[in-house]
Image (cartoon, rainbow, N blue to C red; front, top):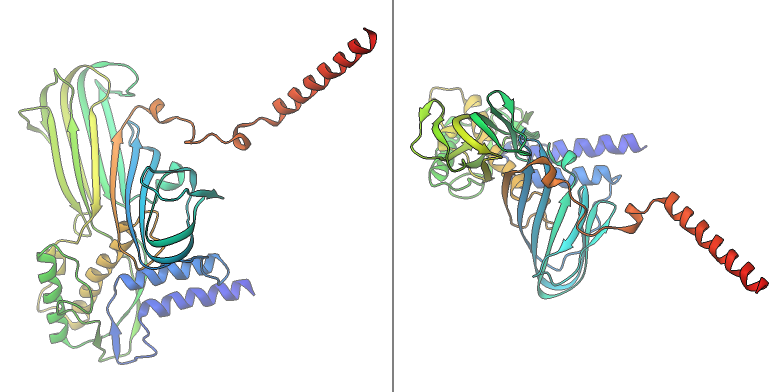
Length: 409
């Protein structure tokens, strides 16, 4: 029974993403953020046996997050912390969970309520009086978060061929190799068909115009239709959307550094600044920096990232292309834009359709600096049952000895 229900829900995800093709057989909908939201909701229902998540909201919720990732000299994420600020609008009770592998949570200074921690999820509940601020710092499990982060970071630091650990100063020829790769690839079912060539070209042109102004094209606005008339049967096409990510790299080498090169080109100072957009047309970037250092522990390396629209060139296609190819290019670009929704909110807005904005930041630290206790040590997690039993036995022995001494005195 459960497997049949799961299959039915999985089928519902596909039908929903296609955009109701059976209900409107002569129109094929263009992918939008609403399809990504419906997919997320259907996935939650699938995990909960057909029931949606328990959630009560008084109104619209605005989500802003700061994700801080500490990486070791090999680029491995050793610590992931999120500062999330939720602004609730409306009057009434609220109850919701922020799911995830949360190790610990603490309220920020501007929070009007205290969060709870239940089975790895952050729990918020209370009464909103029109404008409520719920803000907390979440400490996540880095092992599970490595695959969820929008960027995959590969890093190599050596001095004279030996790996740099950051635990002791080293001198010699430094070689840094940094690779950033877009890691947002997902799946989204949509519809495809033969559509009117002229209308498809117009939709592509409108999409390209919006992208040229560095905005996000959305079906139903700026001359982009929500759907196009199908001239053939509508079939299912599985997209693999990739959310574009704007990445900025700042590298500061220590004083006394000499002979700095970036990609083989000589640099005049010890500061390196790079900015790239990692999207479908350029999924990764690799940078090599060399220098001569004296008594260096670790360079200062910071990587900042946020969601961004794809370059307008990705909405370009030869006007001689077939109608089907034109339409597939249109849905691919709009699918990539729709996937930005999953990067906008990292731990997620409880109001699925509510706005979200997330800034990501990676910093380089020695490994031992990120091994630290939870924000709030919990006795039930740190207490040793054997030590407790031994303490009880010792206490009982002392009491018995005192009784014997008293009876003999």
